[in-house]
Image 1: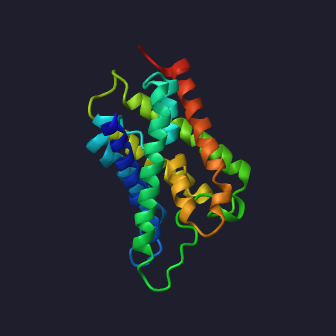
Image 2: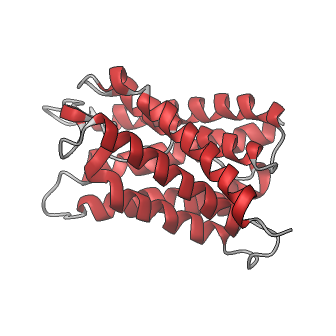
Image 3: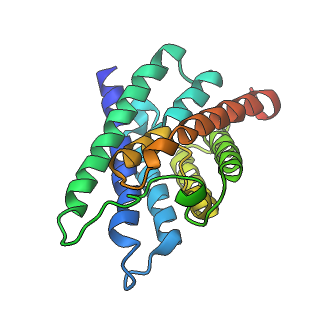
Length: 228
């Protein structure tokens, strides 16, 4: 179990450090020009690379919502869910901490939003709570369907990390303007801890909505899509 939990911690560290790092360190530099599309691709690449690197050890969840959804779908045992959550939270917070230390090494640094998630005034384009809630639930549900489908025994072998990574990229392209994209409670908690914009007070939504969405996606998969 220690190797599986270590793999989840390393993978979630990389997701937060790489994905949020692209937003905090690079997205605001005009001459780099990575914008929303670059940040979206960065998040997708973090999952793709670590799924290949350590996915064979732990399953490559890197996300508490994914762990819950996979348990509901019967892919992992329920007893593994909470240990996975702890490992993911630890990895994500460490990733955000290292990013914070690096980012604070430049003159005039202020953490500001620190790639955190939010609604109303904390939404990148001012989307309200209901819009953000619906987006996070729907996108997490489809993320679970992508994961369950691409890792099914009847799916082409070896391509699941690509489908999952590109799926996460697409999710970010859709929802960065809406919520700055969570679909992952560990990512949201990690960023909110270091943000200085009140994001911690809104992080509940980015815990609840992805968990609900993941459960919904797993239920829909089992009821309507799964082939045995």
